[in-house]
Image (tube, rainbow, N blue to C red; front, side, top):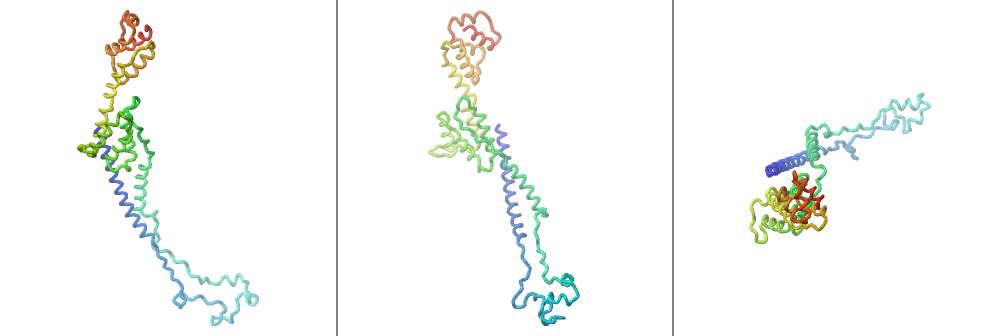
Length: 298
């Protein structure tokens, strides 16, 4: 498990380095896009002082070739012998043609931009996965397993790795998800030994997640739960209801895992004398058969 956590840590560091490279590429390419996107308008504006192109002469104006006066050519359509549409058909459009834009930047044809888009799409696709649910509050209750809780924390950190600067922040978050009088001594002691606060000697390596897991497992793991269940089994009493008595003992034995003569002795110590006499009439193959006989004769 330790080796697995170390490999996951290295993978996260490599992924963070890749993100830094992508950010540098973003800044470089965005600078190129901004530089290429600035297009100047080369169209010259007409100047009132004669610097621009002069307006075309009006047909029929004074001084124009063939001009006979200031009248509109449409006024003598009947004398020209041509229809109005035919007279306008030969007229040349004197308006200036639109100038083509220079340095027109098309990002779709930029190979560098397309490469960057693919890389960013791949990176963002990995970062937009559905985030893991935050770990539940750990209070060391009977239905809680410290191994499952640590695995939930690891999954949550892995899917939201960009939120944590280092492993010490992950440990502080995990400690904040531990509550109750049974876990409070461990939380306070580990936090102070990790930071060296309030006169505690700072312990080397306590800022790493695998060390935190190694310290939490012996304290709240199956070994501790087994000893706790074994003590509680000794306090269970038979009060006339054999089904309830056996159910309590079997539930506690899930963690204690007591079998054989020890398991039978713990139950026999609470049974009435008449029930023990009936059980002694025969031999039993295993603990399951013996428990069925206890339910029958008691």
